[in-house]
Image 1 (cartoon, rainbow, N blue to C red):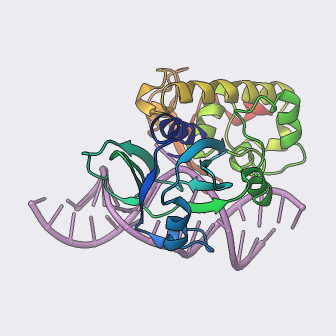
Image 2 (image 1 turned 135 degrees about the horizontal axis):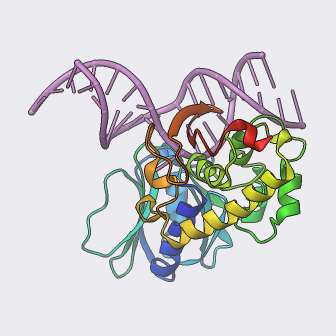
Length: 269
DNA sequence: ACATTGACCTGAGAGC
DNA sequence: TGCTCTCAGGTCAATG
């Protein structure tokens, strides 16, 4: 799940429910999700007695400023991570890997069923993005149509692989790339270097709209519009946009869903 | 330098 | 009901 819209929703959850409260406890259950140079002890020292003061997001990475520390807690959610803020009397959810207790009883918990994901401390979130060579965030206004075109130019392989590449654009993952291509009417295996201008425009415009709508609807697949792919990512169901059928395949090593009618490969050449 | 594949983990859910 | 097996929305190292 945790692609750009999900992480943005997590950011908002923290922003509205976990800032400006003193941290009274820090628990880490899975050391493997800590960055290499980080131990539970160091994380505890960095957070205990402090407050969280602001949040940022870049792609799928969430940064939480530690008040008075000049440092940021960095969270990445892998495939299964979630964030919840709990009031004092609620139990920790299953697979909680990391949680903060706050004065007053609230709790910020990060879960990850598969223990994939990362927790780190960084001094500078832009610096981190630079080290990782993360591309721009597609929900950023700076990614206009021309920027988008130049990000994709000179690349080979499928359009799906290019859009999922975090060095091209940071934030899109398997599900939302399928959604964008579905709505733009472009086949996921279309070679990125062969996309015509019309297709590039359609993908760019659709990307902005899909991400914005997804965030507004809480990144909840059930709440997405009826004509979207997301609520019906299943082999063999009817396409909600034409008389085609949703097909499942492998593209770039990932399960991929597309409509066999309005996303035919030749449509994008 | 760039693209693709397989491994990394664990557990939910399908299939028997 | 209970067992086994497949598969998962991300990323990186190894390979082409």
